[in-house]
Image 1 (cartoon, one colour):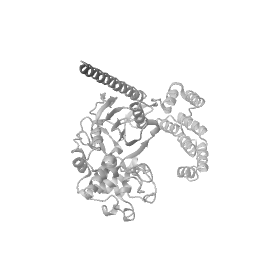
Image 2: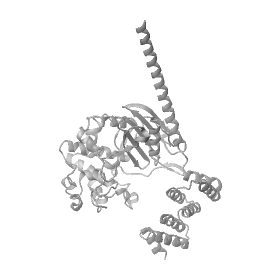
Image 3: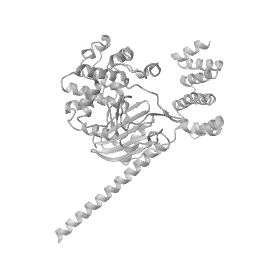
Image 4: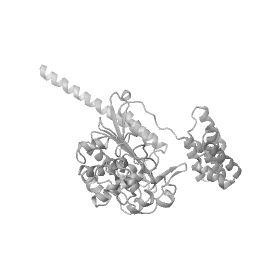
Amino acid sequence: MNIHFKKLRLLVVFYLLAISSLAHSQNMQTEMADFIQGFHEYKQFNGNVLVAKDGKVLFEKSFGYANFEWDIKHSDKSKFRIGSITKQFTAMLILQLAQNNKLKLDDHLATYLPEYRQDIANKITLRQILNHTSGLGNYTQAKSFRDEYSRNPYSVDEFIRLLCSDDLVFEPGTEFRYSNSGYFILGAVIEKVTGQKYKEVLQQNILDPLKMKDTGYDSHNKIIKFRASGYDNGLAGYSNTDYLDMSIPYAAGSMYSTARDLLKWDQALYSDKLLNDAYEKQMYQVSGQRNYALGWEVTKLDKNIYGKPLTRIQHGGGINGFNAFISRIIEDKLLIVILNNTGGAPLTPMTNGLLAIYYDKPYEKATEHVDSKLYKAFKSEGIKGLKKTYKQMVNDGNTPREWSLNYLGYELMQMKELDAAITVFELNNQSYPESANTYDSLGEAYLAVGDKQKALASYKNALNLNPDSESAKQAIEKLQ
């Protein structure tokens, strides 16, 4: 009788624990859904979110539309461009080639691309390219990139000659500078070493073995079922994003995927399916310049906050109309994936919030952006309302950041609301009078309305604060 009673008591305990665990899981899912819904309601996020532990989905939900024109809602099948998350796949391919003795990470680039300019190729190593300490520039920051290059198809060799062959911006190994050019070049290295196209090696070495059937190298002429459309998110609402030929992001950012497929990728990284232990350790080995390893950012979370040492391995990706984020807590095998198709979503605070909810820590909820508040005030009450709302923000101790106001001013200029743009730039200048950039932007706005005298004065103030400002120098030369 005593034995039966003990068994019954144990069963009751297990039952109560199961009920408690289920209730906790449901509460967490509700809290996560409410948290993300806040960003969605402020039109700061539109896409898919997945949280998993040990390969099992804890939370998964879709928000908004894959295609606004056809009112097609997102589902777990939605395929998003993932931008620079591609870099971790490129890094994996390079590491696999090293593991198979096809190349060495500390060899110079010249060993594998002898046609690349030798004064650089003989100085930089593959490892330095992988961790962004090579000194290579960044083609996406080229002045004429968007207008002259971004819409045109290029061969790999042609694009490297055009936009990835500039002088080094620093001595290799001495600094960190994020470089899309470097990862584009790594794609060329993969092709030279294997004798195959980058996308073929990607498919054979990673996607097929992991059965990532909803992931691939994107192309505008392929029919890809459930591919989400990309949009820009401006003050006036959503608009179709600019066309980008996908030969350009290439090994630095041309992939698409789903949250579920990125879960497969996450799980494979805990195994030896793709890489042995020795090379996996190298993949997460940060450079001496920054917490960037080989295709991943690696940071230690505050032990005092989380109660134990935690390692976060993560990376974001941004490309026309899309941004994406993958974050992995190694010790707990926790995964957070956020995929967005309306450009510029605040994925870092969203990820941090989901992480805090999981660990039952405080977090900040979504708030309306400054530019949205000011624009609403302008639309309802004109410039008078814009000024009143701005003054209230300042009085409340919430002076908008310089870059936020600058962004708003330029958006208003694009919308041909020039008087409102000038007002915003003037307010920015009043709040940040020591910033050359506020004078430079104000000068541009004055010039747009034909007020050359005020434009000249603004540009001169900008040059006084920053004697190296080329934009101010050129404007003054034209106006005098």
